[in-house]
Image 1 (cartoon, rainbow, N blue to C red):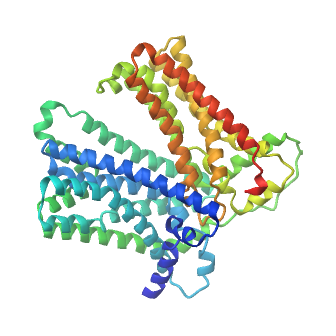
Image 2: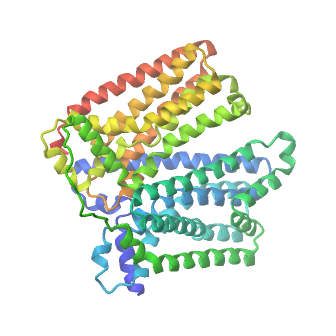
Image 3: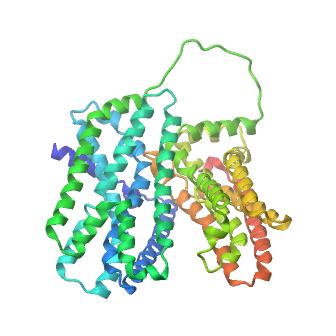
Length: 528
């Protein structure tokens, strides 16, 4: 059995992050694209390192170094929990490969464990990227003994286990429930989004609790944050204290608990794996089909409806892209119910709130859009679409239009809440609508441009395209980066000149969007 696990795990890991393709690919163009992706990963890692070093240094400088391990463990766990829930159906219950393995004399739990190991290794890498900078700052400033280093470093192999167990358990329940219902994708989408919003709400409650800390509370800051962490994730506090106090017995107990939990979850998943898999990929048919009236529609309408059918056929695609407009809507509702004076009162520049809100709202909308992966998700069927007597413009317009129609209800409702909350004058109302509209248009066109530049059709599962591809990464960073740059400019320039920042933003985004749009339409899709 161990040899089977070892062999399957190697097959899963060899394609992790596309390193195996990069190693053996002789195509210079593909190699160049891989270098772009590596550069992007390095840039993201640098941002992550700076963030972890910053908050670690800050906690130590105010004398609260004892809470640092628990804080880092909580951050790692929340990140793993949030992202792994979306992976369960696409990785653990992936259809590709299982049909080949199922006739072979391989135990079901071997397949489950091998797929778990691929997720586990990926989470170990994420854990190291967050833990090591914090450990470096702690070691440089506090200079602990070797036991601390041993406990903290060795804990990195066990920190992901409980959030992984929870995400696997929740993801399996969602997949299991949806697999037994006719409209399984819609049920899976609804449950996944509900869980994701709950995690986001819990995390925001944690952030708001820490942001309410006043100067007078600094003397008891350690106890305050520890109480918050105990409510949010008590295991992190237990493990963090055992590391700080060098309590090997408690540390070993925490490690044992995490191992027991993950083993129990994997046993449960293995027991119901085949049942869930069969229900998940089964189809329902009826023999009472009747031909009704036939209608002739325009090419754009037909292609747009095709994009919507493709979109809602993938729960992974929906849950990863719909979160962005939902967050923007939640931001608008929060401003309406609590008032922007209350939300921005804790910041030094709260007088700029009315100028900042359109940019924040626009950035939230553009973090994850559908066009960034719409071409890659065609997969092996891409040749069918590009061989039809359709122009490039017709195909790409449908993908952009689908994204805009999807965002439209969220945008309108969000705008209503913002208008009621802010009661802007005519000029502020213009910017409130125009700034997000310009950035959304640019984000949709930019997603097509980047996906044309970095298409991936031979993907193993949709998770690798929706969450880990170059195009999704670049597009999400692009819109957010532009929004952040102009927000920074608002803080720099005098208040009398903020209107010029807004005008420049709209002109810049629209010009770039128009240039990219016409450039995309000139692309020969047959060469992709």
